[in-house]
Length: 309
Image (cartoon, rainbow, N blue to C red; front, side):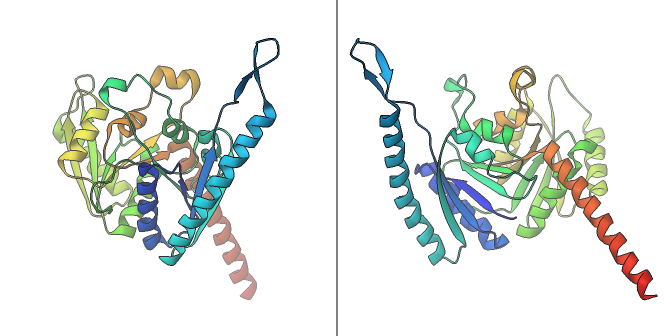
């Protein structure tokens, strides 16, 4: 991974995300960047006519002070990380948090965003559109969403939930790389629901064929029945005490997202287990570009060999 990006809002959730980043960096040797985004509304004042007006200078001064305060804290965080042997840097920016975070990576796949997230309860699930949701939809790199701290973070059991179509193969390859790096086991999961049901023998066959086609190792095949896909994924992951849930997402926005929604986002909202989401479109682009690069390198080598001969 080129870089681990940790958005920091100084909450317990972002501090836990930072701990997760240190763990991953210890394995990947990737540099860690801390990012704080100052996102604030204009401060209203009362004009001479009694109308509410917005003082731009006052707003700018507020943003400046907030940024300076954040810089001091991030500098201390970075020094602590460096004392642990982590290559670390920091940056403070102003803007819409989700946009600034997602736009840090312009190239597909080349990094990881580790995002602390409070999530929601069943009672307040009406309130959608959080920063985490929007980052997941927009980001061109994988996003690991983590919540409250529950013991020491590790990656030993990964639940990979999917429809296991050909479209999911690039994501499976990335999950496999992660499993190899951390010597983890992948639990392939297909969820049966009242609206979509396959006999267990049929679903296991699909899972085994998918695993073989993508050359997965250290894996298990699992079918779980539940009311909805997202409930099935969360319940199964809790049942086996998984460390991470890995999923692909189409990153739909606007009307398409409103109509079709996102199972991945629902899982992120309701799972206490960290969820690693991959943008399927970006992963397919990355796989294609990697294949083209390999072909170019192969062609160059062949030309060099022919010249020598």
